[in-house]
Image 1 (cartoon, rainbow, N blue to C red):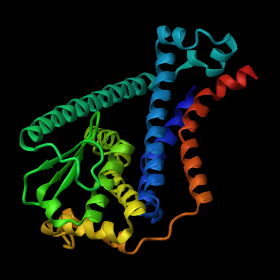
Image 2: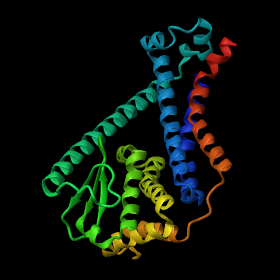
Image 3: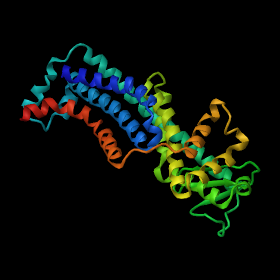
Image 4: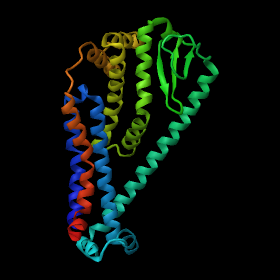
Amino acid sequence: MTVCLLLLSVLAVTAAVPVPRALTRAAWPEREPVVALWVWQCLVATVLLCCLAALTLGAAAVFQTVRDRVFAPAPPAVTAAYDLSAAPPWAAALTLLLACGAAWTTAMLARELVEARRRRGQARAHLRERAPDLPAGLPAARGPLLVLEDEYPDAWWLPGHPAQLVVTTGALHRLTDHQLDAVLTHERGHARARHDWLLHLSTALATGFPRIPLFAHFCDQTHRLVELAADDTASRRCGHLTTALALIELNQHRGVLSCASSHRLLGERVDRLLQPPPRLGRRHRALTTTAAALVPLLPLLITFAPGLTALG
């Protein structure tokens, strides 16, 4: 049991500190933002599964009731292989720390979901009061769409069932039909991929654990990569140049080409669309995605290794 806890701790620390820093310096996530999002999710899942597996083993070693429930279906040889009766003195402290972390994570996720639902409800009610229904003959109009009376060009989406697309009259006046189609395709890409769940998860973890590099980088990179992925969705249908021009027209009043930190991502997105980087091959993309998906299996293999050995 001690060896399993140590291996799980080493794997969690490795996935939470050096790997995210190396991933943020890599160049390939800009070429394949969807694959990069999968890799980040797998890293987070690995850390959370390591903590959950360590919590289960620690609680089984410290508390007889938990041990009886967890290992009730297992043969006596499996229980003996984990050596739960000889728990080290620090197992209780580690179990308590992991239990507090699990409770705090659950509380942060619940708070983020409640706040997001409250904000979404308020935004929908506010928009319903101000925005008329979209005429059926508008080009590229698909699905629920609201037109908001506002001189500033803008477009965004509100998560929900169904997702609500919002476009201002300023955007309708400034954008051409093809540029408007690119903007709406970008926003529908967010809705189809359910990027709101990723944003809620990354925000909750970064807020609850601000000193853990993995969760801080996960939050920053998620907000960046979902925009790149939606840009790719729009550019595949409407073209790189049309999508870039739509992005410039839609954000020109915000200083899209300025060097301010808040607008730097917009400039990077425009440069990326005007000069699209070479993409990974289909075989390399499949290998990267498969390798990332297999990473969360490591905590489970470490946890169940003594039991599998005893059964063999």
